[in-house]
Amino acid sequence: MSKKQIYYSDKYNDEDFEYRHVVLPKQLSKLVPSSHLMTEEEWRGLGVQQSQGWIHYMIHKPGRKPWTKLIG
Image (cartoon, rainbow, N blue to C red; front, side, top):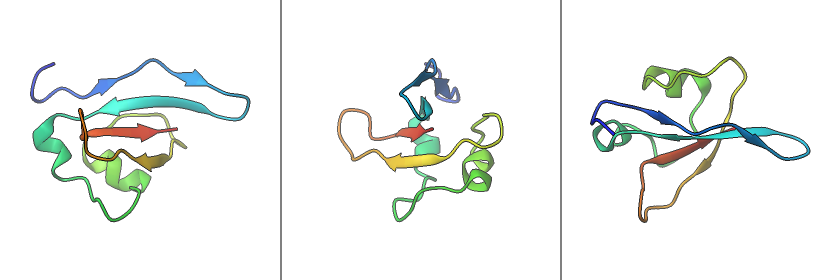
């Protein structure tokens, strides 16, 4: 993955929701707040492209890929 490339997983779902993982380049991930889940305006400001209505629902704790953000 290029340093400037944002990776989007395939969509998957359960009985209620549709999900996808978005992996940000390390440099871009430094701009992600750790204090709260991002609003749609915030994650769009980072360059994440999704159709309207997607919600940032989880902060991934640091580990193997600490810059992974989950949007559903």
